[in-house]
Length: 136
Image (cartoon, rainbow, N blue to C red):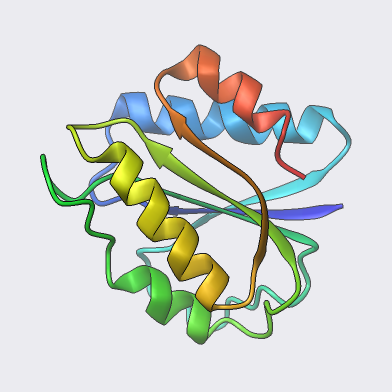
């Protein structure tokens, strides 16, 4: 199965890079072909139509509020047909609004037509390895 692991994270630090790598490796260990995509870059030619499963990962934009980056809806709207595809919503634990951010991310992905079969709030690298096995 072709899996797109899309990260919408401003200024990823070492911890975030390790978490994303663990998730990608764990998903690939199940036999999936995983492509890690940075959603914050200007990817005009990125088309998600070729992927069977779309995993979207972000982190809260502040300590409170649960706001999502505007780039998520813009990116998904211009990246081809994703309606009817399976996917998951992942949020990196940060601040007090991780649960609300996850809820808002799920709502945004479902508005684009994705059928979510999994969601989680990722706390550390060990948890990321477990989450990665559920992707795909």
